[in-house]
Image (cartoon, rainbow, N blue to C red; front, top):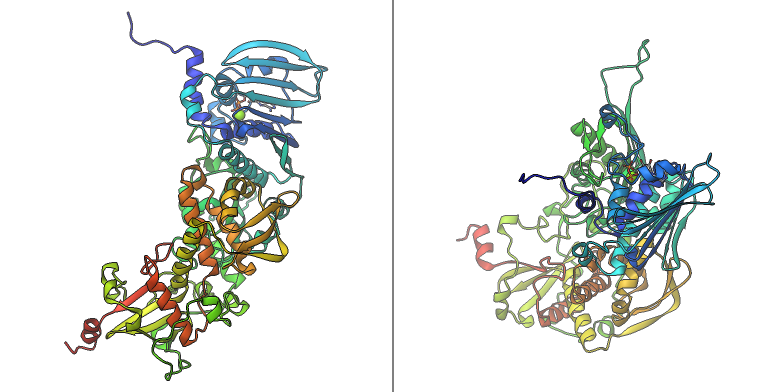
Length: 628
Ligand code: ADP
Ligand code: MG
């Protein structure tokens, strides 16, 4: 008996579904793509239980005749390509003829559809590739695909699905991406009876960005448009050769926007959301030395390129692409974005030069060497925790707009050019025992950002911001543990707009936010009112902090424990409430800071893992002066 045999169709469909249908969001993606390919203007998605129970996509597109509707569920049935050459110029989102049979193979599916020229529509019921029924129905032009009980017949897949809210957040993510790629369409999402968004058709991309992200983010973005001839040596000639171009329309964030991950990078090629290493590389290269290492911008890149110049048939999910002219496109993107950032002239030119860094002469020498106040707020009433003057010229954000390639040492990282990197030493935890805060005497500040101190013949440089961050971080965590978080009510509640994605994440973490001292209430559609906040936080930083939490936690809510989220919230509050750099500190404030720092469990590293103290010991000083 032969060993090789053809797989039954139902099994082949399940295998194919493994590639195309990973989770409810992938079903939404495929169905939305079909609706857009069918030239629908209105798209509505309805889900229940994060799409696990039910997903319905309704459109007013071209619809399908009864015969086509049946055929569409056959493997490799497509109306979008006919011959092999078509593959070199794919103009539609779908083309593989795989989605419908794959989805039908792992769910209970009902399709209802009608074309313009058919008097009646068709209703088709399928479960795991078995056609259960076909009937004529009256319905408007367009198509509705209803998918119930996803993976009911693939328990192994079902087991891997996450919490409803997580699956919903993936759906929101996918739909937001399509909403951005298709501003001319009306796109709405309802989850368990609650409308999460309903984006109305707009003319300008910018307007869609406003609908999705709100005005706050839009203000931080620079819009740019650029184009490049793809065949620079050929010009338009008598034979009618028309030069083909690559067009870029992008929105990129100013250098003071620092995201903790790549969640806010969006790339679209011919209105298809893609993931591509080359595109990410080009973008991040444009930001090199503008953002501190480990920080990411917000960026939306919309690229239009002749269809023949890009291959989308790389992966079943069609989100990976290959460009024919990789490096040309890479350099074009990088340069266009870089130029736009430079032209926007966000900040004044700045470069760190060691000889310009002076010890602050304002430090009164007659001060007693050690004077400690126990309460920061009480003892140091005039200290601005957040001041506008600090914001206007934040050291970390200054960038050389004149000479883009001059390296900028980011004070966010401790290797800030004060001491050559190889000679730097961060304070070794095991060394602490030797230090009593009494032994540390502050001498002054560098750039009103770093405390310079002596400690038994050693020179210490303390990053005032991260030092305070560590103090607050431990304080918040311990207060949180003892259940006595200090809060402060806001006179007027602060109203914050949320993106649909953020709304879902907020639902996930609101309990934790409450126990950290936030009182947050829904306030109309995708808006919330913050009524009270942790005592250490000023309202000025509140919006930024919340945005950071809601963006930064996106991926982590899926896999990280609540413990980790607690720490993250505490770290975020601490970071925003801590004394900023570029803030003058009186002598007593410096000693207070050092004292409190030494009381913490981990005085050497900040909650984000950066060093707090640099130490230049006596031997190193003597060596540097060639005395030994
Ligand atoms: P593909 O999109 O790759 O062609 P699918 O399995 O997703 O494959 O769909 C098969 C075919 O069914 C499509 O080529 C299209 O002709 C038709 N179809 C699917 N969804 C719709 C829809 N919403 N409106 C009109 N036609 C549709
Ligand atoms: Mg399709």
